[in-house]
Image (spheres, rainbow, N blue to C red):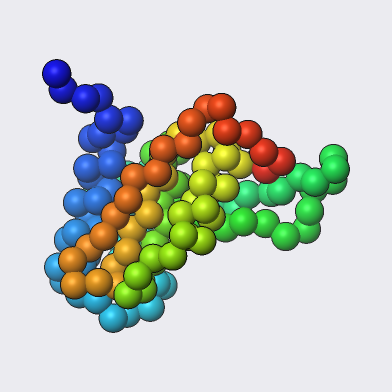
Length: 135
């Protein structure tokens, strides 16, 4: 029986574009370089996205002045976080989960350009997870 993946085709497109970037640029650049390259690829593929998507945080019914900034919101359904490190720490995973919770988005992709082979991780946020993060 074939397992149904959430946003399978969209995820395939995003990861494919990142693989193309990694093949051309390799590892060793700052995150901003890979973000710029991904923005070009998303534009060329006519894929809808928002870069540096801001999320407001509510605490005790007050919107805090500091925000979270996700690297990309793609297809209005997938948060994409870009890293360029020799290894991705658990903090990056938790950060992505917080972005998903704040917008009630189910899928995030954590992508690391900092290794010999592109690394990516799909992060599913179950609907039962809730918190004090607001749009």
